[in-house]
Length: 262
Length: 289
Picture 1 (cartoon, chains in turn orange, red):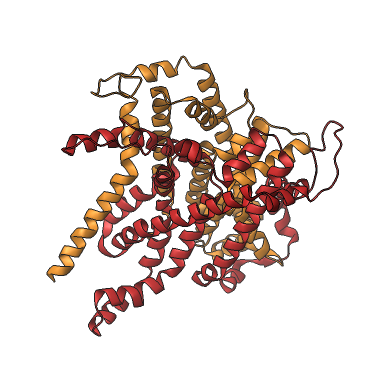
Picture 2: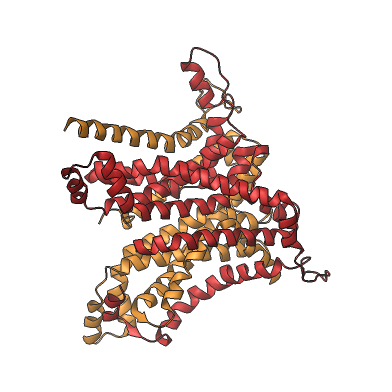
């Protein structure tokens, strides 16, 4: 089967090409953040000045803190509320359950441009206005469906007999949940939480429509900077973001297989 | 699935409510009410704020249908979505096939993770990284001129191809992911049976593998097409002056022109288009389970 081997070799080569396409721009961007020339000129000259100057950029630092704060709060709220909803959808059977499950998809499937502008209109109309509170409201709503889907997937592997057994041994509902169910679904809850953090930390479109000049997040600040013109400083902060979010996803992968391998 | 659930689950909405309410209330306040408000708003003449005069009107929708600019741009965005989706199929499907059927064990797991990892990193930053590659005097320009014996100028930045490249880069992992999941579920013995019955590799591909992986292709296509039609940041950064699409016009109504009712109407038209597309894809997706 020489043909098979040749085809397999070609396949491997193709995957290598695809990985090159996916990673080269990111690697080049990262490399340029260590290049001394402010106009991205070669030859390459090593420097960490651009990273150092990030520390002087108060606006960027404030936006970074906002991003982290919002991502942490989003993670906490959406993980707790999402896990609760997943449990209810798993345990109880009632009319309209299918509808509730279907309602999780609009936040994922509708383009963020539409969701973001709709939130802007509504929050303005009811007096919440723009700012960090509005951004937080939006981020939690975007993260919730991801948490519910991930935790529900984990619950599918849970044997309901375990709850029955604990109950027949005299445990009450709270004890059953905390001592039996929660420990079992913990990997799903952690993965859901990491998804929520990533959704919030990387979110640009919705934050963009809901932010004001003083109350903004890091991606929004970067977008504004890009539109003013490219600087190695943007490369530096972008490199930091990409390293953080990729590390976060690698961590998530430890807790949650993406459905590929069983 | 329903039968399996019934063993451990109990009837009744009442005990489930306290667990469900917080999450769904949040979704209502931050997603469903805003979407309804947007529809309501798209029929208004002005913002109902600070004592401004407003009344109901169909003018915002009339603007869409009377000025060819908006429908032209919507078609440009639909075309962009179609082109990006096609490129993602062409590039992503073979990769998904190699991952599912050629690579094995730990190397498959590692490479699969590497392919979908960028998808979960910041989209804005990844689009920006292409600016480094595509601009004149950028890496592509420098590298090609170093290799080629003649002088050429590669300046793809601020062009339609640049927008396509950036968007394909952003969304191709989606296609790899969905196709990989369906391809992996195809029993290898089906492929072997086809081969041993005398079908050529191409025949097996056309008659067995592609039909069986169709749900993955459709799911990937829907998941890519929909956000691309609504994209505005990618065309702005990589397209420059050529990057005016339906999404950028909606953005303008909200952040530059401040004609929110018109923006709401344009958004709602986009939502309707998106829902029609998702509805068309839904039966295939449901069959995939």
